[in-house]
Length: 336
Ligand SMILES: [Zn+2]
Image (cartoon, rainbow, N blue to C red; front, side, top):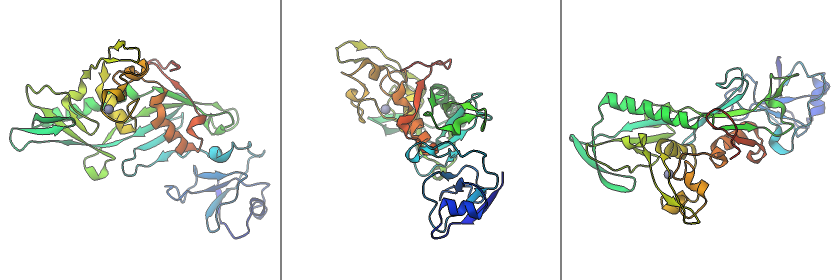
């Protein structure tokens, strides 16, 4: 399908533009201000039934119109076709919407969040030094052996991705036909599977997040760390037994790396933002304690928000209109 470009004039309506191009109606495509595809429209915004773009906007009219008018759009902004890529800006992770032809999950779309992380190896001046790391003062740490540091990076990436990948499947609301696959006639609604792929960059300027990495000195026991201060203890699971609202102790093992990467994706503790035990679920609901963003290793729908917010920005469909399934490790829905 080709496109004719046209600059919107004062007084234009969709009908007048349609007459000008000799087509029964127009589906108007125009590049959004930040679109990378200013000169090659393909996945930019469509106006349907609404006003035409502002005067002076360059729009593109497809030269081959569909035979029947497009389906009525959903209300509000919900009828936009997806933007395939949201590029990162400061402290915002990049995300990609990948069609079922190239996604990692056959037959399904893939929504991939890509944090750009610069792992900064923290080096003491001498062979050993001390630093305040998260809530602990004077943690003893040593220089990284370069190979150990590369191994640490690789293991961290793998563990975080293994934990978070394929945990959520999202279904669009009825009437949002842009996720029908194959595209066009005969396609069926396809779901979106959520993934994260950490991209390591080699300088702070290119990063959305800078993580200070410490190698604990021999004999240093602390597990203290936070989402931007990692020690090699991040590869270990941590136990924190909390009591729920009935006073029952809930034993947990927290997947520390998944928890901290959860923060990088924008997730918070289930109850509040601080590091008090209350925030992890103490005195609260058992699920809050067992959740990976509490003290445990489970996920539920509350952990889907980073992807839901992205999906809203990719499609214009409000987050509340998506149906979210939480999945087990075999891809079966858990209804959590
Ligand atoms: Zn935390």
